[in-house]
Structures are given as structure tokens and as C-alpha cells.
Amino acid sequence: MMKTASSHASQSILDNLHSTVMVIDQQLCVQSLNPSGEMLFHISEARACGQHINKLVINEHEFYDRLERSLASNHPYSVFDSELLTHTGKIIEVDYMVSPLDQLAEQSSLLLEFIPKNRNNRIALEQELLNQQEASRSLLRGLAHEIKNPLGGLRGAAQLLQRELETDENREFTRIIIREADRLQGLVDRMLGPRTIPNKTPLNIHKVLEHVRQLVAAENETITIEADYDPSLPDINADESMLIQAVLNVTRNAVAAVSHNDGHIRFKTRTVRNQAIGNHTWALAARIDITDNGEGIPEDIKQKIFLPMITGRADGTGLGLSIAQSLINEHKGLIECSSKPGETTFTIILPLENGHD
Ligand SMILES: Nc1ncnc2c1ncn2[C@@H]1O[C@H](COP(=O)(O)OP(=O)(O)OP(=O)(O)O)[C@@H](O)[C@H]1O
Ligand SMILES: [Mg+2]
Picture 1 (cartoon, rainbow, N blue to C red):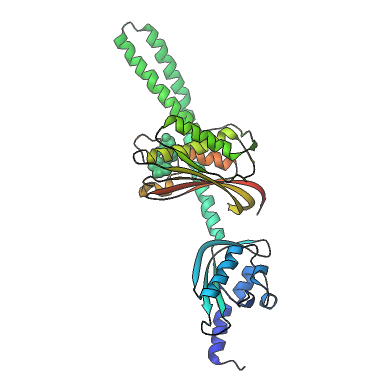
Picture 2 (picture 1 turned 90 degrees about the vertical axis):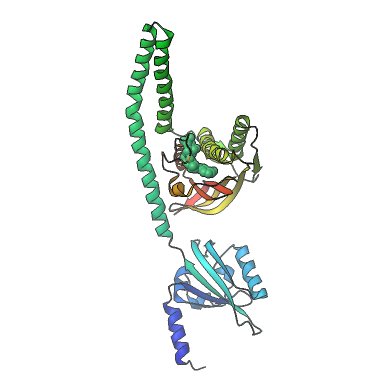
């Protein structure tokens, strides 16, 4: 068939598009792929045509199911922030839209548009954030170190003075100095953070979570933590007390957030495949979600809660999350959070095995 001027123009548009456009038929076989798609999937249009979509995007049964349902129902749909594994073993992060074509014809087909996310950009951003947080942590550690020694001297001197003082009234003053010095000492110790080298052993993550659950139950009789565990989660090579501390810091915040209302906290564990952490992708990772139904994180501090000394509470020191993050970083993991009123989830991801760049 002779191509008209307008079909030439459409072809040229498709060829020059930055996003990927693909057409698949009722059997989910590729009918056409534009040059951007050839780059995204590392396959020429000639080789892709006639291949089932599962030869390009592998092991994504939910993805195939939805394509079939869209064909059957003639309904378009969009998916955002999706990660798809391609036949070259590469994971692509994309938003994609699926639209049924030829709705009146007997042989319907689907138009797929893939818009790649700029993953490099995201990694650079994450890295910058981590560097920033590391810089504030070391500033704080330096400061804490400087305070620590004179504080010890101050406390010792107050103790000596206390022995010399005759009246109880006067000794009350030295008692105040000692008490406040102890309080500062506690703060300074937390600012210095855990500096020990992790002692990693094979560990069942549920043992850590159960430990925290019992601690919290002992501290608060009114709050119960629901457990939704994936029993197939393999052991992880980790330092038990560091992980307990990290999970405890996050859970204590959840407890504080729900303590005024009918609070609910849930621990959920799952395995995740092909998890990207920084510029590394791990074949298998453990995911721990700690969810509460409190008021959510105040908007004005939402972007900086992992920085030290950022707190939304009158009695908070703002160190808990910063410490939790450095403990999780020690295990090459990541900690992130999503929050809206009534549902706040902190997610800890810990790699299990087989990383590749
Ligand atoms: N689950 C949550 N729900 C609502 N706000 C939260 C939650 N977790 C953290 N936040 C907010 O983030 C802030 C920072 O938490 P972080 O644990 O670092 O410090 P903190 O709890 O204030 O003090 P501390 O050093 O005693 O832990 C909290 O003060 C709180 O405002
Ligand atoms: Mg806290």
C-alpha cells in the first residue's frame, strides 16, 4: 500500500519520539516498536516483531495478565513507577500507559507507551542526600566529642564539692549539677552514636521484631503491635543489637504518634526481588514495614526527619531516625518513609544476596 504524506509524517513522529511506543496483538506478540523502544529493550524492531512480550519483559505475570484483561475489556490503564525486568537482565524503571486500539475491529491490539524514569538522576539525588546526612552526623559527632571530656571533669568536680559541703540545702545545688551533667552525658552518648564495628551473624529478622514487640509491650500496656510476617524470609547476615536499636527507634516514634488515640501499629515483612539500593541492584532483599495510624509526620519537617536534631516533639532530641539510618546503612540497606494523616509507614530494606551494578 502506498504511504500517504500523513502516514509518513506519523512514522517520522514515532521515529523521533523520546518515549517508547509499542503495539502488540491479541496474542501479546509485538507488531511494532519505535527506535526509542529498540534502545530501551536492546532489541531491533525486526527481531522484536512476532515475539511474545514475555521475550522482552520477563517474569512479569501481573503485567501480562493486565495486558490480557485490557484486551478483553477494551479498557486503557496506566501504571506509574513500575520496575520491569528485560530480557537482557536489566531492570528498567518506567511509567507506562496501555490503550486498546481498533476497538471496533475484530482483531484488536494494544498500544503501549513506556516513559523511562531518570534513574541516574534519582540515584544522584539519593547519594547527595546521604552525603548531606553523613556530613551533619560527623559535625554532630565532633561536637559531642568536644563536650564529653569537660563534662566528665565538671561532674567529677561537683562530686568532690558535694563532700565538702555542710548543709543539705547546699548539697542540693551540686546534686542538680550532677543530675544535669548525667542527662547531658546521655545526650552526648547518643550524638556520638554507635561506633562499634558490626558483629554480623546469620539472623532471623523476626527474632529482632519479636524482641522489639516485647520491649514495647512491656513499656506500654495499651499498645499492641500486630505482626504480619513472611515465614519464608531467609536469614540475614546482620548485627542483632544494631538492628534491634534501629527498629526500636522507628517503633518508639510510632508509639509516640499513636499514644493519644486508639493506636494501632503493624510489623510486616516480605521478600523483594531485584531491589535497587543506590546504584546497586540486589537479587533478593528483606523488606520490613512499620506502619502506624497516628496523625502523620508534620509537613514542615517531612523532608528532613532523617537529619540529626530535627524533631517535631517537645521532648524529642531528633536523634532516633538519624541513628536508625546510620545503623541500616552499615548493613548496606535503606530506610524510607511515606506518611499521610492516619497512615505512616517506615520501610527498612536489607539486602540478602547477589548484588550487581
Ligand atoms: N511514626 C511517626 N509519626 C509521626 N511523626 C513521626 C513518626 N516518626 C517520626 N516522626 C517525626 O519525626 C521526628 C524525628 O524523629 P526522631 O526519632 O529522629 O526524633 P525524636 O523522636 O523527636 O527524638 P528521639 O531522639 O528521642 O528519637 C519526630 O520528632 C516526629 O515529629
Ligand atoms: Mg524518635
